[in-house]
Image: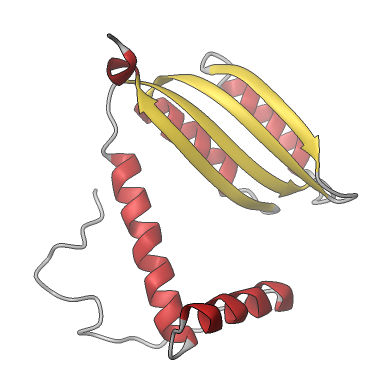
Length: 151
């Protein structure tokens, strides 16, 4: 099932109130960004962020065939069981992993950069399995089709 922003209805036409919980430091950083960018409200900034998230998801989900990708992930290594879970996931997808770089950002957070090569759907499944783990703070992917690199 794909996500579409083109249903003939503007996202703002039907408003629904929701409540979310955010760490104080994340909300403060978000408030600073929306102020610097000139948003009139948090809601406007959140709607824009969700739109961008959906567009990224849509573009990624349309990728087909063999891909080469770099996946970056920031996570809290103090999160109970997280390191073990991430290692288990990486072992399940070892057939697509070419290289991993692990960097200690500070006493609690790590950055992993993983280079993968394989079918786009398998790469998506690997990334999705990593990003939904509690304690994973950020996941980003840069991917290119192997056909685009052929000359």
